[in-house]
Amino acid sequence: MNRIAHLLEGTDMPQPTGPFSDTEALQLLMAYRKDPSDVPCPTCGPEMIEVLAFIEPEIDPDGFASVTDPEGDYAAALYCHHCERAIGILAGAGYGG
Ligand SMILES: [Zn+2]
Image 1 (cartoon, rainbow, N blue to C red):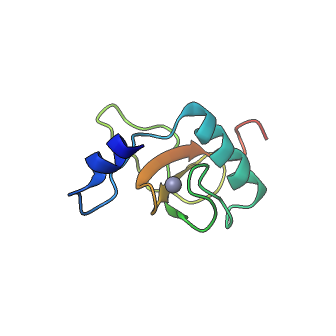
Image 2 (cartoon, rainbow, N blue to C red):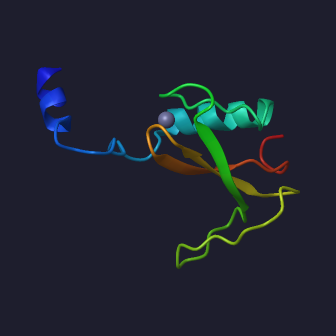
């Protein structure tokens, strides 16, 4: 604990801890499907997640995702303002619905 606190000293901003884990991704997906307007961060809790954009579920080989409408098959790009992690979840009706 003290070691971690020491490492964080001198950093102005909270550092991203890496991508969401598979478990967290599933929690985000379940929460999104339950209520897209109320998706808590598995780590940080409610009211931290912002839906940045709706994107095509297929990301092209260059790593770019096209913005789309939240209809049919789409993915939602979520961002947590607290832990500064982003993730795209497959939110469209075509996935397990
Ligand atoms: Zn978070």
